[in-house]
Length: 191
Image (tube, rainbow, N blue to C red; front, top):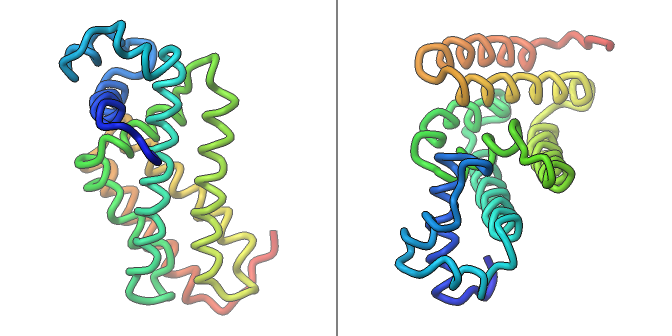
């Protein structure tokens, strides 16, 4: 991420693709080394072990996806559609970004030994998402609607991982309709 050597950049670029496709358990440091054009032993000159390499690319994925999320909320056309732009872009983003695929796969299926660090990072990501969403809401709707929004996003993430396509689109449309109606409503729902 910061001040990486060209060798480390190449290793991380190959590793994120490898981990996104295969997951942590099926990942092979040897295959990553081959993809980079180096020997496996050379990986150990840059990373102590598989965990260190994995956490490096996971943290990079978190940062890139945070930046993407921030841009989505900044580009959103109106507060009346709060959070919809990010959700509507998820399917395309999932198809084109190995970083999002790695992030979601890891968040929902964390490697056992790295689970605490993964959970901490992903929870911070979700808190930031919730914070961006809250800024778009009237005060009276912030608490309950921001929690509902996170549940909707979680549902969309699961659809991307397991189903994709039509199933994702169906859930997205339902979510957008619900969200739009909730934002337009003047009623305060107490939970």
